[in-house]
Length: 223
Image (cartoon, rainbow, N blue to C red):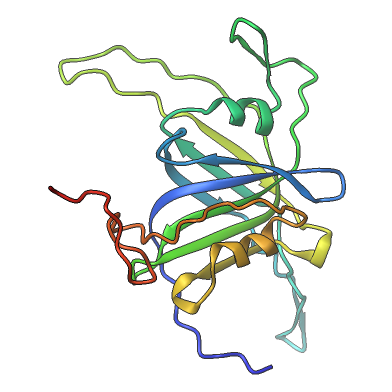
């Protein structure tokens, strides 16, 4: 099947992130969402996916370059607040009946798959996916006094390492709604085994009153 002409994929903003909790067979059994109603996403940074090139020299020239493949990726995610299910499902903390979160010395974090949603330069949803990663316990806290300008919230962050998923040898992905991709299609690739509906809305991120299918909502309407 011929590949259609595809538009370039740029990105702006950062609306939300879906973290799929994996079982031992790399199937996603639960999804944790961080968005405007839960935690609030601030920044996602990924790095380290480039493999190390190995150049061999012969006859006084660079004669051969090995297939670099990919390296071990690093994922850094910051948010306005740390949602409860991120602490318990993603970071492996326990919580008791009094609402006390406890990180024990034998804490075990699950592998996760990640879908991060921003928007492309056409103001339509675009997605970046990390096929398999594991987040570590938060490094610490940074409490600061309020000043004349008021108090600033501490913005928690979590970091993780990404590896190759056995299924399909997948490492990372990206796609855009401008090329016809939907969130459901992207999730089918990134969240194997998951049958839930991540989002029934097709709203354009930059315009809360209009949908990508051209219809409008009543949100934000004036009487």
